[in-house]
Length: 275
Image (cartoon, rainbow, N blue to C red; front, side, top):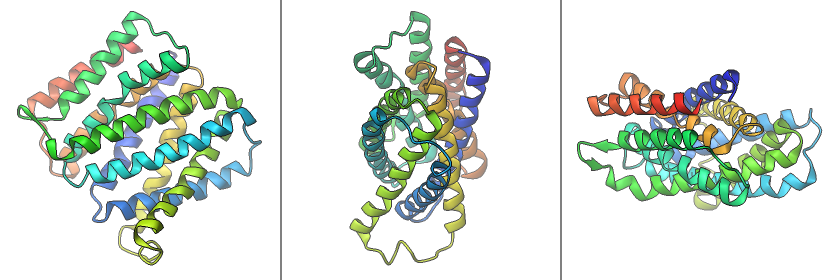
């Protein structure tokens, strides 16, 4: 994998951890997530109008990915009700790389070498170990965190196939994100009605900016998947838990233990092997 692709993915990992920290720190996380999606939709439509549309063969994948993203959003919001960023985030992100590699092999015909598989296993194992509190997992949020991880694996493979059929990675990304950004407010209105969504509250600007950051982060990942193995890209992206651990420690008052530091070393080793 070229160095510039690795650097871009690591930058996307930092951006991803940052917007998750913004979401975790919010009082009403479903509202914050929906505002983020509105920002994603507005920015995506503005960019999409400047680009030629992606190939017709990719539209089915864009729609499916948008639906899967909404499912991911709902599970992620629910998981943060009962778990810290340093516990829930690693479970969510750590469960996806191996699932993506298996699915990419089964549905996209990808074959990953032994060294890359070792790297992916190290990254996934290190990330999951970060989710431990002593010798116990953060059980209250575990089902939702694992569910969110399954959604990540599903939409990553769908987008990996879709972007390769699109002939235009950026156009595919913005149209998919526009669909996702429209669907999430529809789901929110169905759950809570229109009044609470369009009421201006403290944290609106933060959530809106977080949405723009999330769009940039995922756009980088989709660009990387257009020419690099899905499993390897996903594993590098999941190093965002390193940034999440540091953000949780410095800004959210969470602990940074020896266990977490060792897990970070394992993740770093896996990243080097993949690269």
